[in-house]
Structure formats: structure tokens, C-alpha cells
Length: 345
Image 1 (tube, rainbow, N blue to C red):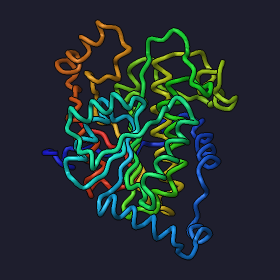
Image 2: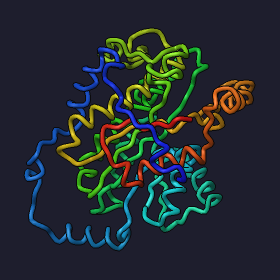
Image 3: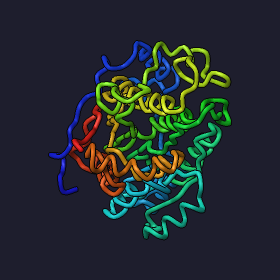
């Protein structure tokens, strides 16, 4: 990345910008994630077994000295470009967690992903059981190799829906795919991440979830979880919104991104010192030509990139955004925890 870190504007996402309900997300994280204290690792300590030794040898033979990266949503958009950038270094083995393996196979061939360094693996974020199955498959694949980077990137944006779509588990679809399933994925992998020498967990947020920006605070509807009344009631059909109010497709997306950025801060506060994992969130810029907007009306998809390029100046290509996320995952100068990474333009 030519601009390097000098082109990055970092800022801690201030808790004061979030609604009072943030305390409940803290409690949710405390309940769902494993409780980690300074010496808890001793509880699971065991003398090496023949199986442990075998798993370590399998991992060494499979990965060598390469870092293991898990990225959700590598078949298109930001995840695709980030995976390509990581693979070009030759320093990573990338597991692409995707819904459509056939599509991923075509993309990997088109982009010339090295099959020795890239492994597609199925996950349907609309289904918690699929997330559990993905983690089991990942553990079988990687043997004793810990995950070095977990990048929670996949997402859907359904602003025009007149009514909520429900996940397999009965949650509003955008909230489950964008946030809840990533929350589950982190909770399943956090102890494994902690075993890596330089672990990072990166959550892809959005300016639309940050109400102290023009994009987040100046464009209706504004992300606001209020007192999380909907979550308190389970946030399951027929309760579509975490705030307990009526469904709004655009707000559901923004709320899910707000949850991701809040969770990144919570994870940093509770687990960074104990685990050494660098937790951060990132807004790589407005990918106006991204498949993220595939459910918007045709006139919007045609004119929005023009507006972002020539009116606001906030347009970012998928290639550039991928380089930005790659840098946060790769650059030693981006190993700081508790940071919200964003760019000026």
C-alpha cells in the first residue's frame, strides 16, 4: 500500500457515541465468550500425547511457517480483494468461509489463487448450526495450527425490504449474518486465536454505524440501539430490531455494524491483556460498486458510484479497500488493539 500507515486515520470509537444499551452488549459478551483470566490456560494444560505430537507435525507439514487466516465472504467484494492481497505475499494460508463453494471455485480460478495456499470452506451465516459445523471442519483441517487472523467481513445490506426476512434461527437476517453469527464465530475461536504469536481479530464496520460522522449521523435512519429492548426479549420472530421498534431495513444494517464496532471495543477491554489478541474494527471506505448494494434499485446502483466519486469524493474501489483491510491484517504497525481504523477519503 503506497500510502502506508501515514494515510490512515485511527481513532478509538468513543463509548460516549453509543447508546446506553451498550452495557447489555458487554454483559452479552461476558456470558457468551469464554471467561479468560491470567492463569486459566493452566487448567487445560496436559502433558504432550502422541496425538498432540502428531497434530503438530501435520500442521507443520501443511502450513510450514505461514500464518493461518480465516476470512468470511471471500467470493466477492472486499473479502475477495483482501484474500488476493494476502495470498500474493506468500506468507499466509487463507481459509475462505463462503456460502457458495461453486462460485468461490470460479473466483479463485479467475483471480489465480494458489490452491496450495487457499482453502474454501462452507459456512452459511444465516444458520448458527452451520457456523458450528464450520468451526469443526476448520479444526479438523488445521490440526494443531492456531488461527493467526480472524477477519469478520461477510455481510448483507437489504435497505429496501418492506418487511423483515428471518434467519433459520428466527432472527432478522441482516443482524444474524452481519453480527450474531460473527459473534458466535469469535466466541468459538477466541481461545485458539490466543495460542498464536501475533493474533488479530478484525471486524469490518461501517461509517453508517458511527453517529459522530456525516455518513452515520447525517443520513436517516441513524444507527441507535436505544435500550436494547428487542434484544432483551430475544430478538426473534416477530421481534426484528434490537431496539424493539418496527422493522427498518436500512437501520437494521446500520445497527448490525454498530454492534460489530461496539463488540470490538468490548473484546479489547475484556480480553486483550489476557490473551494478547489485537481486536480492532475497520471502515475501509465506501465501496459504491460493491455487490453489497446488489439489492438496491437499478437507478441507485447506476448513480451512487458517480455521486460518491464526483460529489462527495468518498468513492473507494474494491481493490483499494482490499489493500486497506490487508494492511490492517498484515502490517506490524497495525497490530494495536482497541482501534477503529478509517481513512480520509
